[in-house]
Length: 439
Ligand code: BGC
Image (cartoon, rainbow, N blue to C red; front, side, top):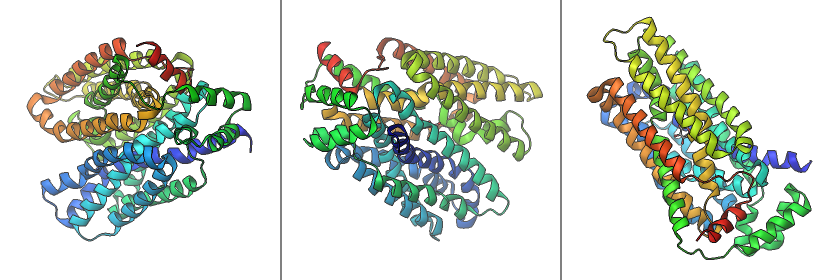
């Protein structure tokens, strides 16, 4: 196997964690209709089944930083894959609503852990000139997972078999675990633990010997303890800020609720609403590929600012689409087009770039814990948006709600313009050493 093929194999199997992220968050929108009937659930219990995963993910992100720094990225991902598989099978087989919620929370814990550990692992193993692309394969797999979950939901909708909808997630979970068995540990984590020979061997199996030696030399220069500098404080603000903005600009209202939005916009049959939802999924996937292609060429900052500008414009348009009292064909089309532009803009910017930047900007000595803080914030914000969206639609109406997200996107644009650094083409150590020089 050539070095590049080996590298792509590593990225493919670890990014299956991203596929589970997309699948497990996406599949519930279709499955819940039938779960509700089978278990005769109250609204409160429905909310628990749906948001149990998000709640669990916050818990998972809390422990992931400490665990990944202590036991290594690989071992943690292995255990996570096992939890994914067992909890998915459990949730598909249980006959009790309480156990279903417990199993969903466990899936969430696994998600919270893998959502941060996978990008960090890929960033730590990638050569600098292709790191943007490789880390973002994880985000690409998130979009694949969402798309596959829509297709699976649609295929089982006629029979109403929610157990299959949820249970099929066990297959990628098992493959993820089997794959992780054979993948190497992160060379950067090994260096941190003082296992230089092993780290060198792994780097040499992925990249040229000269490149590997250069990276090792840089790694040796990074300090084992981190000073609290203003720059580091700024990077914490960047990670936490982007985590919040990625969610409160509204992406998951579209991902989780788009059939409802399309119904509001006058798509009368359930099939047309579901079809429109499918289109949103495809756009998300297609534009993430565009991001993969551009991230290492144009850099992170430029794409982030362009994408955020597209999100602002499309949210304003979406607000206008819902202004007339009567729905019409024009309203329907304006909604569809604005939603597509919104999702495309997210897919080239905040979608991949949040996860990429947080994997890049923190010093090795505190990387796990620092990414964990950003990830907890991200899942927490996700939970808040999911729980408030329908109430916001009631209180502010769709126009007010989308303009609110638009206003928050404007703040996100200025935040990114003034605070987000460019990390393209630098090794993780150069990024870290530059931090030190700046203080
Ligand atoms: C976000 C998720 C979102 C997904 C959509 C991810 O980067 O963290 O919350 O559902 O993108 O593609």
